[in-house]
Length: 164
Image (cartoon, rainbow, N blue to C red):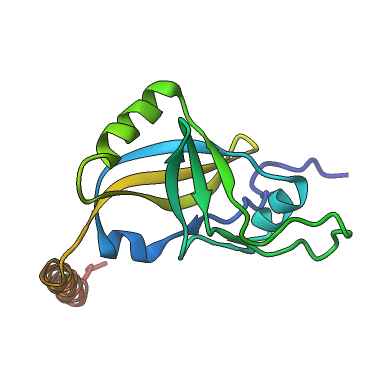
């Protein structure tokens, strides 16, 4: 029997669930990596990629950070003990980080936005960012820059050739 190598037995990593609209709607100043307190069926659904951060936001309450409105689809093979789809979930941060976040959020215009949900060493982690809302003209500038960058990449890709 042939011995299997790492290249032949590739493990499929769990998907990274991103909030794509967050960077479009907010200027992100600082980011923090936080653990998420989840139930067993929630972990299984997230590993299957059945979650969404599109409408989610984080807030401070009694010295703790909570994630609200994150959608996690109920686990298909769960029993009657399955979780609620949009329940509040506690974010696990250090006290120092919570104090920093509290200082920023008390300033006018800052919000705590979830950016990405992923697994690190088997634990569910969420990347939250301190963001300030963008104005419509900021969004138009970002779109112009993105289009210009894309056009430049197209021109470079088309003109570059290799002689063999």
